Image (cartoon, rainbow, N blue to C red; front, top):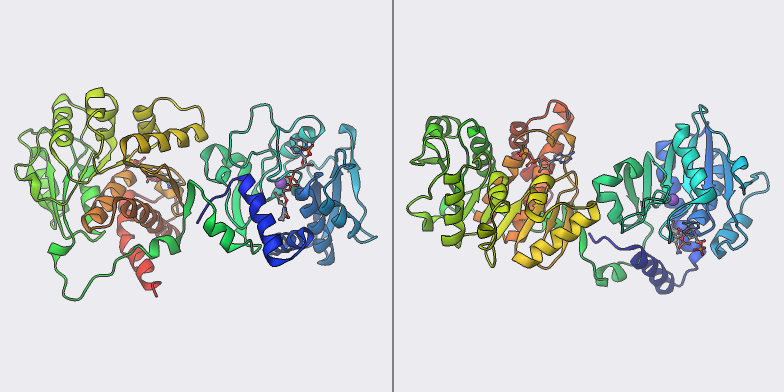
Length: 506
Ligand SMILES: NC(=O)C1=CN([C@@H]2O[C@H](COP(=O)(O)OP(=O)(O)OC[C@H]3O[C@@H](n4cnc5c(N)ncnc54)[C@H](OP(=O)(O)O)[C@@H]3O)[C@@H](O)[C@H]2O)[C@@H](O)CC1
Ligand SMILES: Nc1ncnc2c1ncn2[C@@H]1O[C@H](COP(=O)(O)OP(=O)(O)O)[C@@H](O)[C@H]1O
Ligand SMILES: [K+]
């Protein structure tokens, strides 16, 4: 699914209006109906609903929603905020359409801002949408600040007012802190960035029938991975298939005190369909791996505690995964250096392997033109690319790093972002806060390694792997919740996650 900029969203609106031969007020009516449908499911009629409308089409939406909720017996109070002498045409149309018994209140100065503290009211924020073109200050900022400090439940139409859709909001701009955001047709880039969680709250997308032709033709660098996107990637097994068809993976993982990382990566790799798995661990890990993961073949390093060498016959493997639990000893750095210098295998690089590379220009110089997938969390990513200013800056670095080295980067987080060598970014849509616990990243390394071994392209392996990893956690959630969830629980739910995707296939 594509993510459009504010400008592209306006073009999509205009294209739809022309293609369907409808008026912009009709499209607004669709948007208002779609919003109202969501709202009715969430909030019962009864309490007061205060709707704050700005001078543009977002305000127009607010007025149309006021009329529709009024018709459905909600106790609605619309406010017109600021100078509405230059309001948009569709705002005017919807103002005229308000029924006689629905009186608006005009908020033209600070003293007229209603005091909603302690009233338990519900607020709909329709001040600004995608047409916001400068930071919110003055009277509008006072309104947003009053809402933020009043303790009311705010639901924003399209986007929280004051928040920029696809670039960093300037620091002097006020932004409403919504509990819910109900957006039209496609999610906005701003919703996917962790820094915006306090403003966006729980977000939902409702369809308003924007032109699918426009959406399929428009160019964008940003995407959301939905179930239908990964389902078509999934390869079914053939009846006469054998383990030789599903790849032989090598995991170079684990170290003294962190052998569990190797166990987690190995188990996840096996649960993701790899044909054969060999794990090389330091000697201290031999009994652990042989006991905890009997399906895997185990090689031992000459070093007792740390990765220090590559296996002799490394050529025979189809894919290598490394990093989890390996530590950053000098001997391990040498081994990772050898790996980069001598191997042409597709390789998944995680955790301490990233840290070692990040700390060495010599190792970094070896990254070019290889088949590499990096799976950093935000701190590991900053070690690779330097300090970032904000989430947009991080995305820019992500794209630049991937383009420079021709690699894939799986930047982990609540909406994990997969960067590609073409500079595209795919945000994941599965997963939950139960995954915020040690070892879940090691599980992801195992999953992606297994998928590359099964001949998925690097891009497919990243997208499918990240999706399935989050889906397993989502399937674990109903019985385990997020507080008690562990990385092993995620592995235990991988079978259900793969089944879920295959059973839904046509
Ligand atoms: N097009 C359609 O058919 C559909 C559109 N839809 C809806 O329309 C929304 C987009 O509407 P929009 O383009 O009118 O912009 P909107 O967000 O209301 O703001 C523009 C107004 O705000 C003003 N303004 C801006 N920044 C400001 C600031 N910081 N401080 C103060 N003022 C500021 C700006 O004034 P100006 O810059 O001219 O001074 C202008 O008056 C979209 O999010 C969705 O909700 C849906 O109904 C689907 C169909
Ligand atoms: N709040 C969250 N919502 C969704 N996914 C999460 C959340 N927190 C963490 N994750 C996922 O859990 C994994 C954590 O990886 P990482 O930080 O490398 O853990 P570790 O190093 O302990 O294995 C990542 O895949 C990340 O996307
Ligand atoms: K809004």
